[in-house]
Image (cartoon, rainbow, N blue to C red; front, side):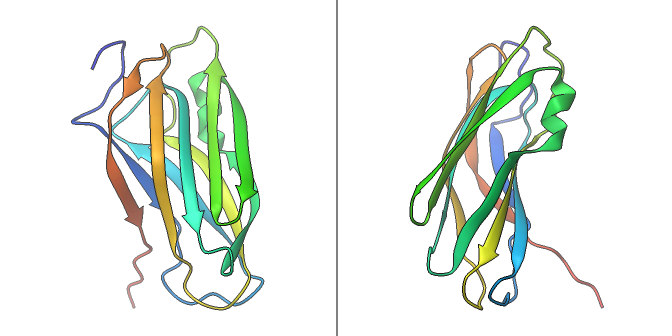
Amino acid sequence: MGHGLQCDSGAAVLLDGVPTESVTSGTVFTVQVSLAHAARVGAFETALTFDPAQVAVASVELAPGLALSGREFVLMTDSGNPGLLKTGAYSMGDVDADSQRSLVVVQLRAIVAGVPVLKIADTTVTDAHGTALTVDGVRVFVPLVVQ
């Protein structure tokens, strides 16, 4: 793709840290939204859906690695609809260095015991020049425990 954007057939959205076992009520856990096969991210927007009877958003922040791009990112969030967190960021600056692929870190608090179901949808990404990046699906990463 043009404008210095580095990707293969398209960027995949990654959701990391989703619990695979039951969590107890009140437990706070962290998930991270990232991109695979993309660099020089200039802006992004995504939606995290969940059962509002199961979990609530505790906090949302930009992934620390975005600062490594040399660009100043501004976080935007909208959690006004139960079960839906819309979040994204845009950046400014002249630096066009590779950015970290981690985008946003979300902490969720379990309201009831159980295995939370989280989904990512409606993700759009542009490079540092405003050129749209093709997003090819979502992948959920779960921890592998070897005993």
